[in-house]
Length: 146
Image (cartoon, rainbow, N blue to C red):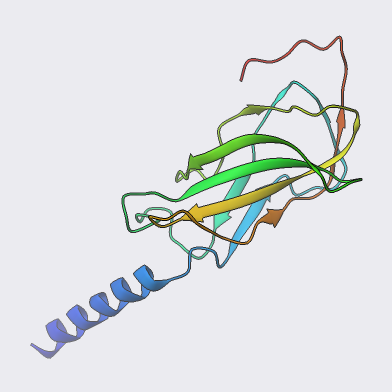
């Protein structure tokens, strides 16, 4: 009887602590992680992430999977937002965004700013900055269909 009671108490304490765990703690970008990658504007890319604080097989938000991620592209020279390539996409257990076309106005250095939203009111975690990468704009390169 004592073993059964102990097991039930352990399971309940795990369940409560998992629900109270802050989803913002531990989120990190897993791709791109290498500095100075060279990409081509108009081609398909994606961002990978890891939610180290939350096991991916659980309901990430505790409210029907309402956690979302957005990805914006910023100029590394000016720190100005250039484009939004993923807008509040639902998180998935694969830890990657959908593929998107890299849209930037000029050849240069850029970085992603990844923002996680969670909860019924879309509470926002502190955005995470990726490594800097180079994008080449070639007017003769055909646009990819992602």
